[in-house]
Each structure stands twice: as C-alpha cells, then as structure tokens.
Amino acid sequence: MHPNVQLIQRFYACFQDRDAAGMAACYSARARFSDPVFPDLDAAGVRAMWAMLCERGKDLQIELGTVAADDRAGRAHWDAWYTFSGTGRAVHNRVDARFTFEDGTILEHRDSFDLWAWSRQALGPRGRLLGWTPLVKNAIRRQAAASLASYRAKREAGGPPASGAAADAGAGPG
Image: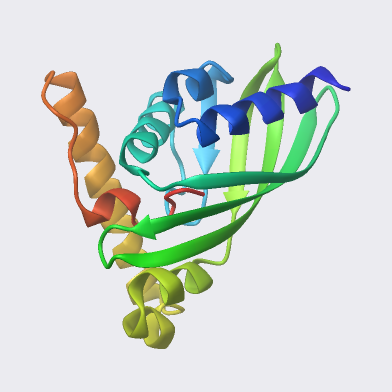
C-alpha cells in the first residue's frame, strides 16, 4: 500500500475519532484547503476548521470509501452523517476529496460536494427552494467564515470555543 494512501486513511481515521491534532499532523506547514463553504484556507485556517468541526460534531460519523494515491496526488470519497445544529436536521454529506502531497504530508486538500444537496438537508424548505442561489450559498459561506473567525479568536484568547449553528454551516464536515 502506498504511503500516501496510508496518510489519507490515517487522516480520516482521526476525523472519525474527532482527533483534530491527529488530523493536523497529516498536513504540511504550507497546507491549503478548499471546499464549497471554505473556499481558501491556509494551514492555520484548515487546522482550526477541523478542530472546530471535531469539537462540535457530537454525533459525527465518517465513512471512508475509495482511496487512491501516488507520490504526488491522491483522491478519496468519504461520507459524513451528523446533525446540523442550526436546525436539528440530519445531514448526509457525500464528499470527493483531492490531495497533493509534500514530504509525506498533505499540501493541498480540495473537498467537493453538492452545496445545494447539503442545504436541502440542513436548512429544510429554505434550502430546498433557495439553496441553489448565490444569495444563499454566499450566506452559508459568510456564516461559516464568521464562526471560524470567532472560534479562532476565542482559542487564541484562551477562552472556551465558540458555539452555534454557523459553526457547522455548509462544510461541516466536508
């Protein structure tokens, strides 16, 4: 088995265990992350995002599907099941991930999923009717960015982590 396949498997095993430190250890110091909700996070941002999602994902279940990787790049399919705290609605997010590697770590991580499908599940009728629109997609992104910024600020200040519906808006998880 290729070492980068093992790296991807270790990353998602840590995610299932809500081990944000273990996930962070899989990333390069120069890591970048993007998905439909968090379009461009640097290394510190991606580590904080996973920490926030791990802390808040009380009923989170992760299932890793197919994984492939070589020395330069990899891909994986994974599914996440959780309750969206903003509405109490169940979400099943189907995610395809692409990776590039550097020195045995993840340099770039790009998750893709159907944000409209997510919004239909998480937001209910509003998501079903309007989740495909740029207005709602951008609102989800703004809420998630604000929640991550609040989480990071509270962590840096040594206070308790932020909580709330925006914490798992969109991306969370995947």
